[in-house]
Length: 521
Image 1 (cartoon, rainbow, N blue to C red):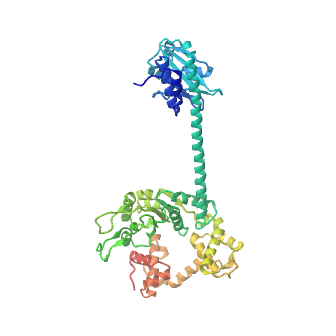
Image 2: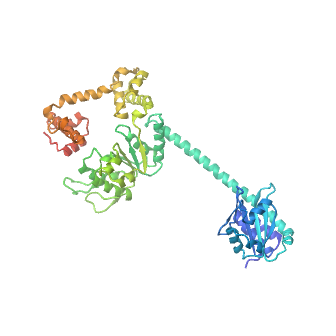
Image 3: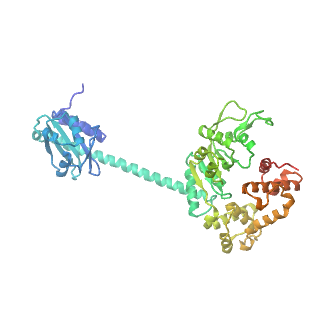
């Protein structure tokens, strides 16, 4: 059995050895209890606000509101003077917290309540001494009690100062970390400004969101109109992430025929289907350790959407014809120009997949809503043109910028780049681009004239006349099919030449021919 501490020196050593405030208060109360034969001793700590007393030694109802005079502690703190409380007086108090402390003290006949203050007058807390008919004046008048109380107050203040220093160090560290994070964010946003060009509030906010998205592993869904730069945003997320050294695998869900998209994503074994003369690694496997970018995710077939959802939940997939599943550690970024909410309502896009994709949603604002970025974007495209061609315009005139500002840009940033590069071609090296070389509405006017000249009434087989149209989408598809059919006739069924003349990838043309049942001539 541990030897009890009886001398003042032993008590002082025991108090000085404690390195935390709870340990100090527990040691002080237990030794006071032993030294003076008390039935119980409590130490209540006053919080920094001076409004609440806390009794860490009491498990139940350990807080006492200093403004609530239904318990005696409030009176003692108000007067700053100690007082004795008898059992009879204690019974008359209906404060549940005090009654809990009174019960935990085995209902003593008498209690001595004494506030503890530092030399600066700051009240630290209170001692509650419990005993059976003790001579309180004799106890609190003893040098041993006075010495213990003074040492307790001294150590209590030291513990608070140490705690304050720890808190200040933590606060300083948090402040420094915040400054470091803010500086890192600023530097990365500045780096992104070389590709995500523009000084508008929309672009500044987008760059900030891209950096934050890159710092997480959440799936990102980029939404925006065609030509607004969703692919540039996806590249920025990859380059700013911890996966920057890994691959970035890009899948255009609209450019790959539905029948081939699953094989492209998952891969296949040799002999998995007709024409699979050798095994092929899928794009999911190729994206291992990097980023998988699913562009135009809104065009993904419903059957494949459910399989993709399972892959996103488990990162496990099975190549076509394979028995065993494979694992791929990839980060998903998806993009679409289509309103997916409408697709959900129309039953062509899974709601659960939408929520899984949009853990970190990003929206790219169309160019017509941020015309203040026109100058920065135009000069950016001029620099790219000059670097590629070896020479080019010096810049762009204010009159030309004014002309651009009055245009709606249905093709967004991609259209602006085409317009600027065409203007660069027609501007002498070293000069500024002028308004007269900017082809805006003329571009679409020429396209319309070309289509009307090439597609004569005899080539519009299957296309309803305007008065008969009841389904605009079906009519547009019939018109597109008629153009493809006529162009194939023009090039004697050569799909490569047909695709080039229409500005389409060959795979996209093949997909449309299959979709519209257009056969080669």
